Length: 109
Image 1: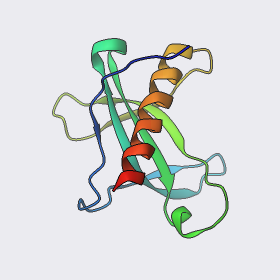
Image 2: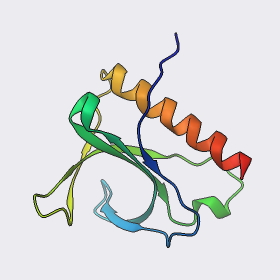
Image 3: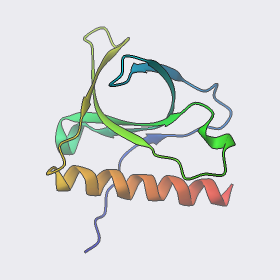
């Protein structure tokens, strides 16, 4: 079953990489590059961010991309990342569709 989603997403290779730091389960600070942001405000009332571990694109190994919902602070500067529930099938389907389009667009460049 296909889904048509028209969501804005950012991916400009000329932009300087946006790096954020998260703390893993062991308390270690880990740097991630913001791979893609997705505006899901109209459909789900929140935005999403896909994160790639810094340096992962240099490896030939398979890379795990992390996805979070993102709630921006009122002043628009920072915000909170929240896990996306496993049972949020519509959200995951939309994220997958947008990511697949991102990959297809990247391959055309």
